[in-house]
Structure formats: C-alpha cells, structure tokens
Image (cartoon, rainbow, N blue to C red; front, side):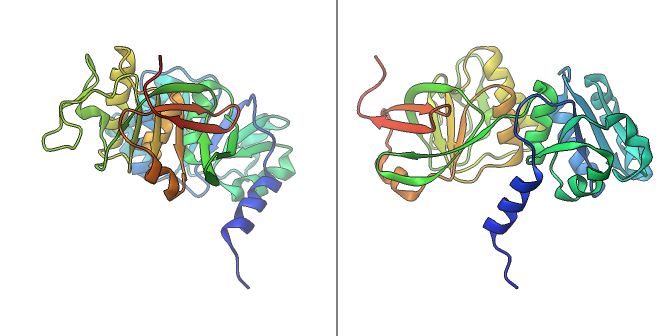
Length: 282
C-alpha cells in the first residue's frame, strides 16, 4: 500500500470542521516535549488568549517547564498545561459540543465519541487560533504565469515594493526603529524591510528572538507588508499570523525567475492572487 501526501490531506479534510470561530485548542496528542511547550510559551508571551488552550504533557516535563518559568508564561496568557492525561479521558467532558483546533488527527478520532468537533491545523496555526479565537482559512491560488501551487496562511491584502534576499532572515537582527537589517555580512545589511514585501528562503534563529524581533518591528510600524518564503518554519508562520502579516509559501520556481528588487507586488490572500509588475506602488 502506498500512502501519498494527497491521501493524508484528504483524510485531514474529512475529519476537519470548517474554519471560523472556535472554543478551545488542544495540543499534546501525543504528549508535548519541553521544547514544544517552550515554543508555545514564546508565541503566547504577553498575549491574552481568546480561546481555551490546553497542552498535554508528562508530569516530569510539566515540572521542568514550571522550574524554567515557561509554565507561568502560558498560564498568564490563559493557557493550561495538563500532566499525565489523554484526550480520550472523561475529564474533557466539559468540552462536549464545542469546536476546537488541534494538530493531531489522532486527537480528533479519539474525541468523536465525546461530541467534540475539530479543525485540524499545524501547531503554530493552533496557537494563533487560541490567540485570535478563530481559525484562518487556507486559500490555494494561481497567479498569472505561475501554476496553482501557492499556499496562503491567513487572509488580507498587502501591497508593497519587493525586497529579495538569497539569505535566510532573522527579524531580531533588524533595527525595529527603522526596519533596517543589521546582521553582519547579510545580503540585505543596511537595507530596510519596513513596509516591503520581503522574499527570502526561510527564517532562522530561535523561537524567542524571531518572534520578538518581528513583534518589535510591528510595534514601531516597521514590519514587512507581506512575506514570501520558500521553506516556512513554525515560528515565522505563527508570528506572521499573530501580527496579521500575510505569509505565502509553495510558490513555484517560475515566480523566482520573475521577481526582482523594486517590483510592485500585491498579495491578495482573500482573492487568492499574487500580482507582480514593474515599478513601485504610487
């Protein structure tokens, strides 16, 4: 038997409810590791959750998270870390009839007997849903001259001048007051990404520094208008969703043959289109 990516995607869609308002987020089936809990903490730090966030892990991992101060960050945001439990236990009876988000098809299968409905998303998208109280819809789209392999995360329309980098980018190494890249020997060193559509291979750096860097840039009004990447990483995706910065990946190679610095780029995730033209927005 051969199981393809299409088979997995189709099964997830069959198990999943339609995106929209949600009541809770359930992660940890199987149990979360300490590193995974630390990533969640970095994403919710300083936030107030609009939906319940439940994280399942072992007693030992929960104790370590508490001693490291990670547990407190999650609880201050409104989340809860549960030890030595399983989604197939009666303790979750209070969630019956509600709609949640999870990254685990196994979780969805277990909880059908308890009348819970789920939307299946990646771990980072689950955390973003807990913060916003809703799940973002995914749009697959085609652009003129590029085949329909584009993936949009979140909605909205963004327009700006393109800045293209051959190097991975860490937003912590951008000056938040100007949006200028300050990383030594980076191809964009000395250039600003503020208000631009930034095209680069992938993010880099730990969860804490990448999230904080993008957040600080947004706080000063110097975040990118949109991000287009070849290899999305969990932290970058979650940060962009939380800060309402459209992020696009899975653009076919033809796009990279076309795009160059200084082009006018419009990312319309609502209509499912990317348009590129010469010259900057007027």
